[in-house]
Structure formats: structure tokens, C-alpha cells
Image 1 (cartoon, rainbow, N blue to C red):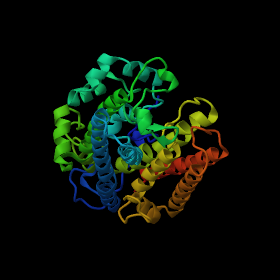
Image 2: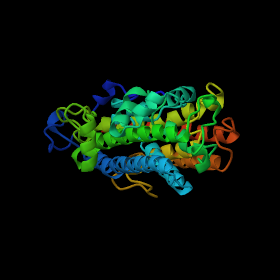
Image 3: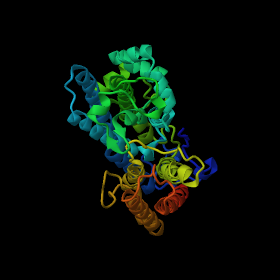
Image 4: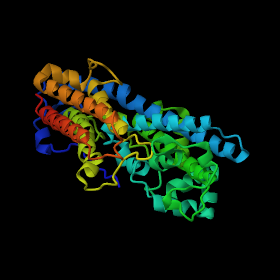
Length: 414
């Protein structure tokens, strides 16, 4: 099972923050000491750019794509029943799933927010999938009937199935096999995975399950979008989250407002330094460490050979690559930028600590290049101990060390 850690300022003591940022003006009476600095103004701009050009659009794209995925699955369920389902319909579902999956993996450099606070990450992205448990659930005709009930079925899935059967990976098993899209003939028959031997589970029952789980996945991704961007989220998403009574606020603030309100009463960020450190360490470093030492490391070292993300689509290396892209987007202040935005953490580093900026960019590029090389070979699930895996792990660990150094540097800004 995937393990999660919520660390607002990993490795930096409260005493460090009391060093503060030496003041040189006084246009913010809410800031400690009633004063601010050019660095504080810069971090404000960085935070605004980061939220508006990275966090918000990524979560909105994720919300929209998971909504499409649910609709495609719901339509496929009906089409299978009336005999009109086509392979093109299944292929469209698979494409939508992979798009949603990519958006999700590109959010993992900011898991420190609502994804962790509200337990959404483990709810929608726990692996390995409990195949034996899934076989038992799908052979339970009463449970299938409960799942096959529109919004009630979605609520039932979210409340009753448990995180080992929810989220991306349960859907992945239904629509992919051995790295390929599920075939129409397979879905028209009886499930033949060894875990399902003797269970007589039909493709129709699998689509009932996948549709309900996709509805729950959609709702949780709506929750993520709303919890970050608040009232600027799509009205239909806001309405659905309210209907589901899902938590969206930390205290009385949405998470983006909480971040932009650093130093003000009610914000969980006492200083602007904490915001920058959170981006570097709790966000970017945390996912770099997880990719290198858990997502890849558990299977590579043999500690847990079954700890393979996305084994049915065989897209593990794509997941890892997108995780590192989430780091680059966070540091560069935009999506898929070739150079950092002027209001970005990387630009600040280039101006104030160019040596460290060079190290981060070098290790970031090395990590992406190594993962591209991994994608050219055998899938991770088929060769988790490939030498290419070790090269990628080493590059990402170097990136992690440099990101931690950036967090420590941020704590000393004056």
C-alpha cells in the first residue's frame, strides 16, 4: 500500500524560521514586525504564479478528464448491455484514463495540500490493487446491484469498497491487460484472470464496478480542484462537491487562499519563507524521494517486488516521468515551460544562488533523460531491477538532495 506523509516544513526547525527576512519597508502591517522586504514581495509573486499557472490549471484538467472518463464508462456499460459497444469506445476510455492519470501524476509535487489533508491521495491512488478482494466483491451479486445505481452506486463505492479497490488502479485493471487496451471480445465474456477462477464474473459486472469507482474518482478530483481554487472552480464541480458534502477548507480558507494569505491571521503559513520551503521540500523534494526510493526503490531492491505502480497499463515509467515534470512545473512557475517564468522559484534561485540553481536544473534534466531512457526498454513491471532503473534512481536522488538544499537556503533568506 502506498504510504503518505504530510510535512509542512520537512527538516526545517521552527527556530530557523524565527531568523525571518530582515525588513526594509512597511507596507504589510500583518507581517511579523509590521514590515516586509523585496524577497517577501518576490515570494508573493512566485506563489501567485505557482498557484494560478501550475496548481489550479492542473487540478482543473484532472477534474475535467475524470468527469469525461466517468461518462465514457457509464456509456460503455449501457452500450455493452444493448449490444452496441465497440472497440473504439473502449479505446476512448483508455485514452481518457491515461490523460487523467497524467494530470494526476503531474499534481504530485503538491501533495502536501488537500490531497493529503483530506486523505484523497490514498483514496484514489493506492496500490497494489487487491485482486483477490476485487474478485470476491465482483462475484457478490448484491454488491454489484448496489454499485449499479447511479449516484447511489458512486456513494456506495466510495464508502464501502476500501482504498485497495478504489481509484485509478481498479479502473486500470478493468480496461487494460498486459500493457494493451482491453478487447471487446474480452469484455463480452467472463473474467479469466487467475484471481477470478471459479467466480464467473462478467465484463458487464466489471464495467458496473469501474463506472461506480470512476464516479467516486471524479468526485474526489472535483474536491481537490475546489479545495485549492475555491469559488473560481467550475460551478458544476462546486455544486457536486457540495452535494457530496466533501471537505474543501482548512479552517475557513481554501488552500490557495491560505497560501496567498501567509503571515495573516488564520493562515497556516506564519512566514513567506515557509511557503517557499513548502514548495521546495514538502512538495518537490517529497515526490522526488518517493519516486526514487519507494515507487522505484521497493521493487528494485526486492524489498517489495509487488510494489508496482500502473502494472496493467505498463505505464510506470510514464507515471514517474510525469512526477518529475510536476517538479519542473512547480519550480518553473508554469506548465511545460522551456525556461523559468520571471516569477518562479527557479528564477529566484538563479538570481540569488546561481550555483544551486545550476545543480537543480542539471539533476532535473538528468532525471527526465534517465526516465525517457527507461521508457525505451522493458516495462518496469517486467524488469524492475534493470540497470536503467538504478541510473534513474541515482539521478532523482541527486535532484532530491539539491531540492533539500534549496529549502535550507530559503530558510536563511535575509
